[in-house]
Length: 234
Image (cartoon, rainbow, N blue to C red):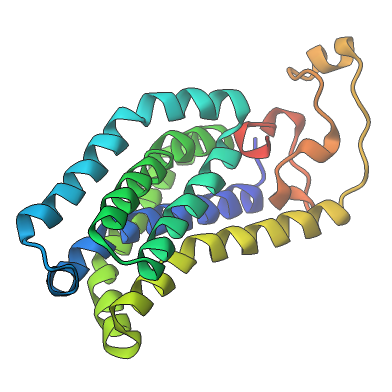
């Protein structure tokens, strides 16, 4: 059974990532009235950007799931957070219709990582008796991100303008990743060095070729059992 603090920290981290994903879904639509004027295009052209976003996001779901299974859900999730943020930042720095389409495509690719990676992590780290509640909190966090996006974007446009709003909104994902990486590194510094398990010993613990320091980063204070080694720790 996984320790409660480990599960809660994992759930919190994944829920924040899901909040960011739904927030990013509404960034461009909220700016359409302003982008229409800035770019000199109509709503049909702007709507095409959302089509590009949806097509790319849908077509890349399966490949991203395969990638998450092979290199680790945590790595893929952090890459997606950074990619989505950088797409908005680049649009804010180089506002043009071609950049809008490219940014929409990159946002779609970034958006495809959240569900495969989030559910892979949650299904591994949460106790079965709390799985339903974990999924509901994760889903609530996502819808909350979409609910507050209009207020946040309207405030940003009023204070820093359209380009500034794109840059500030885009910075949320990379900043979250930076904070996570800092915590991950700090936890590793305080974690005792482990050793490679012999194959027989690894088989006994239902894992193979993992070290103790490969356990989830949030578990340094209260190390989880070996069975908690998962996609999140890759």
